[in-house]
Structures are given as C-alpha cells and as structure tokens.
Length: 166
Image 1 (cartoon, rainbow, N blue to C red):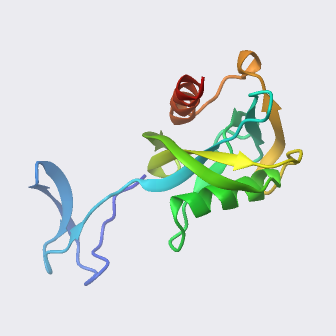
Image 2: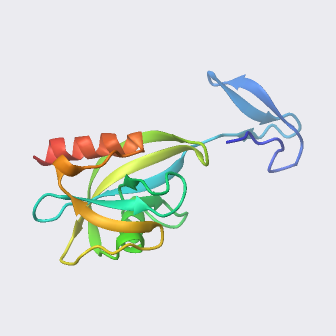
C-alpha cells in the first residue's frame, strides 16, 4: 500500500521523520502525524456437530478460488462480534452468535497493507451454509480434509481453535 503524500488537514506535503522509535509521516506545516494502522477484520471459526470447520471458497480477489474462513472487515459503527455475525450471514447465510475470541494476527496484504485479523468463534444453530456475496462455495470440512489455506493468519487461528477446543 502506498504512503500518503499530503496532509488530510491542511493538504501540505508530508515528510518522513523519526518519532516514537519509528519512521512516521508528519506534516511539515501543521505538525499532524499521519499514523498508519492495520485495517481490522473478523474471521469466523464455526464448527458443526461433527466438529467440521466451516470454510468458504473466495469469489473475489485476493485469492479468488481458494478456501478460507468466512469473514471480512469491521465497519466503523460495529463491534467485532457484530462484524463476525454479519459477515457470517453475508457469506454463508447462517445466523449465529459471537462466542470467544480465539486470537489476533497481522496479515500482510498487497491490496490493503496490513490487516489485523481477529478470530472469533461463532455458534450457529441448524441450517446448511450457502454461498453469499463474497463466496463461490461454503461448506463444512473435516480437520483431515482441510485444503491449503492461503492466509497465514487464518491457518494460525484454525490451529489455535482446534488446540483450545479439543
């Protein structure tokens, strides 16, 4: 992701300066520090009665055609739990309630820069998953049949989820 060039307050040029032990973008005119923070995202960890994990096949880039956890970006007006439940519904048609937080990892992305992926367990009722807005397919998969997951953050969350859920 490209660095900003101009101050969002006064539109003057930004300069890279050492600050708080890091190189930061600072406006030479008004002094505004332009912090670069990771984008927050929720990744849903859902299992069925047979302890199979819910995965989706991505219908969009990045990694179109590959399998991952359902999830997506947290919107400005929602909590992590609300985002997880919304994303699960949008991508699989399943309703659920948020459970425990499993972990958080930074995922580097060519499209978005750094993404803070927070894994959250979501408990669902009955129903079969159906692909939604960003998913070409949605289904429960046994641990032994898990496909290669392209996102390292998802792989770490899946491993931790099964470790603490055994």
